[in-house]
Picture 1 (cartoon, chains in turn cyan, orange):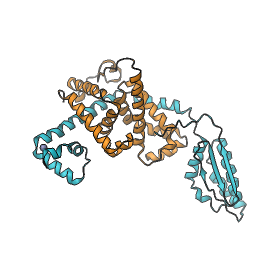
Picture 2 (picture 1 turned 60 degrees about the horizontal axis):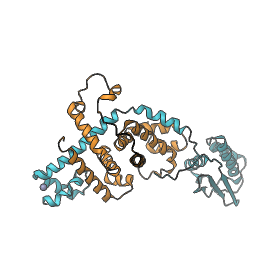
Picture 3 (picture 1 turned 60 degrees about the vertical axis):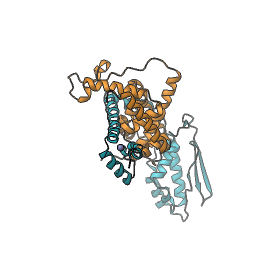
Length: 181
Length: 189
Ligand SMILES: [Zn+2]
């Protein structure tokens, strides 16, 4: 490899972004060529200087202020209930609901609605199986979907009983700001 | 046992402020370093760091876990930093704060006894001031690439995800920014 071949590859070599064969070739050339080795040292000096400068400047920031300030602000952000519902359905693996008698599912649905309005979802799992034992009905309910593209709407389909439950949240405080960062 | 980022993200989604606090404390230094490079002024950098975490919390249900949490955070801080600079450029107010590394008005935050770390010596301070000045002169995009690579050590692939551009663009921006810094710092490095 000549200096001309190597020069464009030097930054990539420095950053470890070349494939092994090229890494070896550039390393070999640079170990014998003062000019290319000097170019690598230049890149390294800039990197060291930038990293050391920023690191020293960050040390001078009072980062203990960050969390209290963030906490104050996020304290005013309400977690939309649709989000809590989604999380709950992920954590409790909605497929487990298959096989649970319809009445129990209906009761659980009521429990979901109830617990959402009371701000807690933890009691739902313990309640549903208990009701299932008391009322064994040979019918199954499937929660077909627990999702919606809209933030304020959740849809729950029960194909077996041909029931659709639509939740509409009137929480107007929440806006997504169209921000996928 | 320390919880993973993904566990903390899931808990934060449900509104668990303590989980989010762990994420903030885990990444605030990294985010602040980028913020500081983007906006220079310490107060603005702190503000930008806070805004980044607030935005992250507000949008945490949009984090799909396809990339790591910190690259997602970098994306937020870089975008906010670029927006911030564009606003500043349209409404220039006062001159940028003169960087005074290891001295001057920073005295309150620093240990009072003399420090023997190499960076704190006069020569290093001069270099630090020059480096800060040289970074200030870069465009927001070039700044972001330099910070993500030289300070945070991200791969080209990660940088391209953070900045939503091709790897080729990352390479050319990085090349340009490095050449610019080399030129500016030739006499001190
Ligand atoms: Zn050469």
